[in-house]
Length: 315
Image (tube, rainbow, N blue to C red; front, side):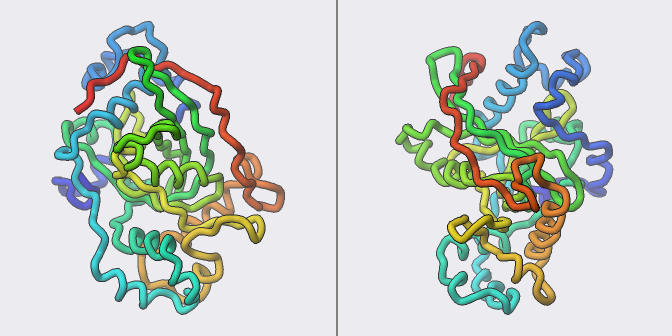
């Protein structure tokens, strides 16, 4: 279910006091299962089970078990994109227009119905629309992003990797997104479908501005967070990067074209606004070099392991 297809009037009534979840505050969240009874069935019944394990189990179950029939709102590419792209800022160079990856990223952006983080619904509303799952498209700046962690299920020894990302935009910050990735050595059909997300995720770093497309919204004990969906449904396109040197990867938009002249497309204006926000508020303490230059990503620690509860049945 997409943001624009929600069956209600007055969106403000459902995002009052919407509170975001980050793993840094999990230990302080109420462990009383009676406080959020509708979520008890989604986590372990054991009151003694570690809250982190409950949270990761909850997230992993959503990633694995939501059938496509309950997910609405992954828009197809807009066929009018070619015409719209011609109306972009005159600063777009011919060389950038000819780059297939840049063209694809811009097409995804222009065809997306974007949501602001301040407009995220609260946990009560997300529970009220169960079993439907709301998905959103976001233009956000990366505040922090973890290295991939190898997680092994307790039953069957199945391995999967988790990347946790904390993001913000020009309206609100502190929104957590869990990105589940199949191990890099896997070559089955599901792993191939998620291959693009793996590539996109592992190249990100703090201060990057990304288009997070088809992010599922869910909640854990009254706190809202974002969630990747499997089979290639969720994508993370790099829109803007504060490049370090000539060898550094660039986003689909450069600083010059975001700053030069009027921008008519609301989606591109959002990129500019988030770029301005992230360059002001995300700095050295989150992985950037002195003078606001972003550091290049470090190699992941592939030896770090964490156990999840038993495998969740596949659908």
